[in-house]
Figure 1 (cartoon, one colour):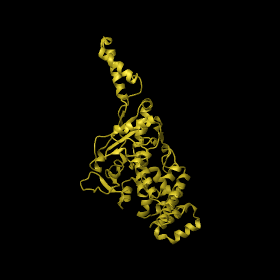
Figure 2 (cartoon, rainbow, N blue to C red):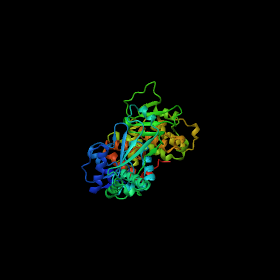
Figure 3 (tube, rainbow, N blue to C red):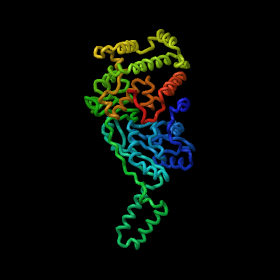
Figure 4 (cartoon, rainbow, N blue to C red):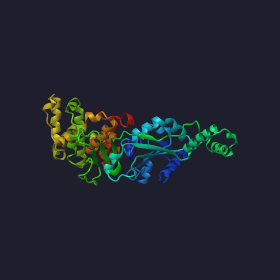
Length: 427
């Protein structure tokens, strides 16, 4: 990962935690969640409090999640606002945190000046028994707590103040006066500070991806024939009485299902106006075949066009079955052939799929679809890096040195890293 770090493609745009005070607060939050403190004296955290250094220390990427349904977060500084979330448990995590900071930015500033916050992402089910249980999750509630009890102290001070103002002879109530004085001495006057964060509901969950059960893509509104689940782990076996259609990501019929259900389409008219997108798809698969053929130490970007053509001519069996068909399609579209007269194979359709127009109108559904397409065809390293970073990092570790260098060169030439809010799929 050192090359990715050097290119700012991993661990970029994180908040640095390097003071004993902040490290101590982070550890107190970990203990409140039920996790062991870190032994590190300095580390970085993302928008939800996840740290790549602590993940490496624990040899566990998703150390914030426990079981299939429990998820947590840690907020130590207002600087976490807008930061990327590198290993989201759910595709909606970034949207939840955007809403959290939008609603409670002042509270975060006041509280984190004195304490650390930990977040509990809760829903109606304490544990998922089956991927089908995901269809019963309509909302998530983010509950906030601080490790020094400031939120509870602020609530108590406000209640004591109300009691004092209502009582006719409050000055004579020694017990009440003692509670007020003790709290003020211990915490200061919190009555008028933004110190109480209410529960935050988030209900935009009709389409999402979760890492539960090894990864599940949930489509509820877009499919024409009812809910659709796509699982990454093949342990779940669909049953006839299932209330949703369930496919595994490796099922050969899945691309046809996505097209039939209106989740994806193959917009030849769009490709006609964006021929470079087809050329990139072709080039991605050439690179993939080249390195799979055993050229691990060669830097692909240094090959001349003559060397590349010679290699392709001698290695056509190593390229996808639709490779020549894609070349013909590019030629047809360049010659302004009407897209209504062009027929393409199922194999090529699966590679050319994009989120349908209907899906593109829903940001949540579009992101879920892009994540799934990045999994179905991980050769597009830019789409993979932007929309499915967890899979990108997993695959990157297994690549040859030559492919790693090529990938980093390609991504940096495309302007990455970019702030997560500015990252867009190629239009």
